[in-house]
Amino acid sequence: MIDNIKILDTEILSDNWYVLRKITYEYTKKDGTKLTQSREAYDRGNGATILLYNKNQKTVILTKQFRLPTFVNGNETGMLIETCAGLLNKNNPEDCIRRETKEETGYKITEVRKIFEAYMSPGSVTEILYFFIAEYAKEMKVSDGGGVEQEEENIEVLELGISDAMKMIENGDIKDGKTIMLLQYIKLNNIL
Ligand SMILES: Nc1nc2c(ncn2[C@@H]2O[C@H](COP(=O)(O)OP(=O)(O)O[C@H]3O[C@H](CO)[C@@H](O)[C@H](O)[C@@H]3O)[C@@H](O)[C@H]2O)c(=O)[nH]1
Ligand SMILES: [Mg+2]
Image (tube, rainbow, N blue to C red; front, side, top):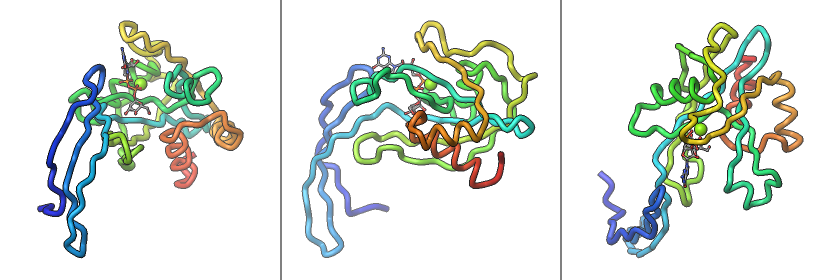
């Protein structure tokens, strides 16, 4: 039972697509003194992401799409190379990632392995992200992928050699946190 944090007030600053709250809380320090703080927290739910890999070919499947927040912060084209990912929308992480993999990459995978979970931006975003890996093969390709039409996702599917993908981290062509974490996991554990 956590008794050193007491929520005093929650104010909704924005409730448009996702929710931005300003939360005021009382924090009791180890020496017993109390501190009142306010922090904003952006709640867009939780998510899951996956790196698809093929051992024989030594390749991985990545996606490329326009990410507006990067465009307004120095990413000239706004295009970002990422592992397939999606929001849970009340699904459990495993079901979510199977569904997203089919929608975004066109691969119908069966076995997935959860490797870890991580808060990706803990100072401001509530989200926890569940990380998976899975093997893929040509026979599992059932559609073009590209994302859901109604959501206008326009996702390009990339198949890259693992050594090329690793070089792209070094030269800045891959600049997405979850993608770097998954590629490094695959290398560190000698999976590819
Ligand atoms: N209209 C509108 N649509 C939005 C808005 N924000 C997001 N969307 C749409 O909501 C859909 C969400 O698609 P998902 O595939 O479920 O999520 P994601 O954006 O890929 O998010 C994944 O990657 C993120 C970045 O790493 C992760 O943060 C997240 O957890 C998840 O794994 C996309 O079509 C996106 O354009 C918005 O403010 N307005
Ligand atoms: Mg997505």
